[in-house]
Image (cartoon, rainbow, N blue to C red; front, side, top):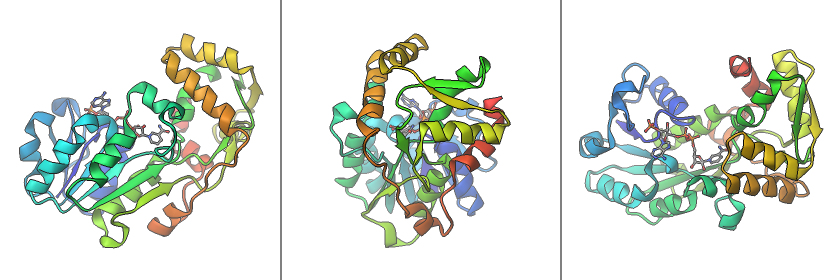
Length: 279
Ligand SMILES: NC(=O)c1ccc[n+]([C@@H]2O[C@H](COP(=O)([O-])OP(=O)(O)OC[C@H]3O[C@@H](n4cnc5c(N)ncnc54)[C@H](OP(=O)(O)O)[C@@H]3O)[C@@H](O)[C@H]2O)c1
């Protein structure tokens, strides 16, 4: 039996599928158990029901956004309940200056959550992904209603974005596998670093549109993000990151392939899995 926190989200849903398709018994923690719409055989528990949710659980997945400041307490409770290991989601930039981690301006506390797990009483594995390919939907989808040009800053900014399914399958391996991954902080990325102005035409080829990326000044791009509803500090931190990292090579790791025994999924494969989201 495995307990998944953050189970209804971007990583949680494919993780439930990965665990179920490996034959594991799975419970999901969610704030809205009645409306969670989970895969067959997955039972939903509310955070208030955590004691029952942990009963007989062998492995726990800690999602930083969902568990946050409660991580230390949750891991301690899991240890009391004889849970054998805990896998925590973190991020590839978790060691960087907090001011350089845009997600902190949205409230994520990846560093604190990862530490609460790695300094806790249970054997652990930390999974540190690069940016999710899914983020491109938030950045670019709205613009595609107006034409085939995607406007944004720093066309040369490159990163090896990762398919959420790869993150989920690595977490599933970490939960289900033997002890080989215990005590590791595993950086996982997509298979190749792509610039913004390379990703957009790839996306276009998959969805059947001649998309191109056009640079706009950083200040204009930041203002547009804020107008479209992004938190002001988050938008500034994000664009500052694009600027800072547009002159440094992106990290590309081979961990997905090493752990899953198949290559990491490409950005084109991710786009192919999400064609309907771009329509
Ligand atoms: N996006 C990236 O590029 C990237 C890259 C690396 C690491 N990360 C990290 O990965 C995490 C995000 O993962 P994700 O996309 O899977 O998250 P998500 O889908 O936004 O959230 C996962 C689940 O957590 C619950 N949740 C959301 N906000 C919450 C809140 N404020 N309080 C309590 N529960 C909340 C929701 O479940 P219920 O409604 O069912 O309770 C949600 O379905 C963050 O820590 C982020 O920093 C992100």
